[in-house]
Figure 1 (cartoon, rainbow, N blue to C red):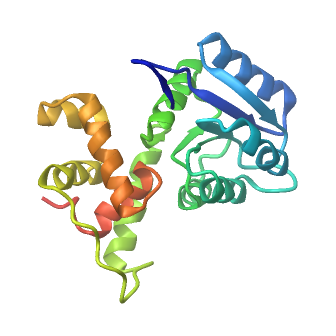
Figure 2 (cartoon, rainbow, N blue to C red):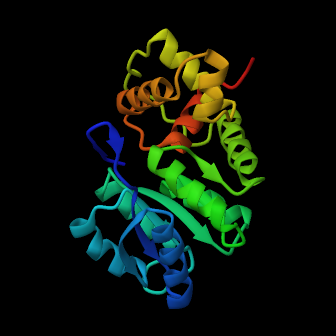
Length: 227
């Protein structure tokens, strides 16, 4: 999300869904709330083609689409457009779909049964880089990361040395691993929300990660969720 002066600019959004009526309804809700819908697309191929010109902060993306599935579209967005985050908005709450989307790089995952207010909140928080999930799904994702960490899955020998984090950055990373939001971390540490965001972004940059979902996974793999 860009800023103009001291005021944050409206979140720029692309909506990708193969159902025109649903796509238009989401666009209308976001626009009425003051967000800027810079583009819509009916499938992943069209979305990727339009991203270079529009550069949205957030892509609101369905999983089940023709031509290019949502998870693969997410993977390509994350790889080719690092300034853009993905919020999956889909009908499925199946474990396999949630984990596939997160592993592809999605920052958030919301089911289509969510209310208008939940969607608006999720888009804004996704633009900030916060991990946003339909209630109940965050625990599923964190549980999967803990399982992977305990079994050593995805681990690799001979990885480069991890960049050094400050004590405050490590403290925030530990709280991210426990599932706290940026606002909860700010309250717990008695610091500003903006300070938490700045520290979180510094950690993301140092570790070369894309979002808080990847950050939580890294922290859990390091055992920072214990204690």
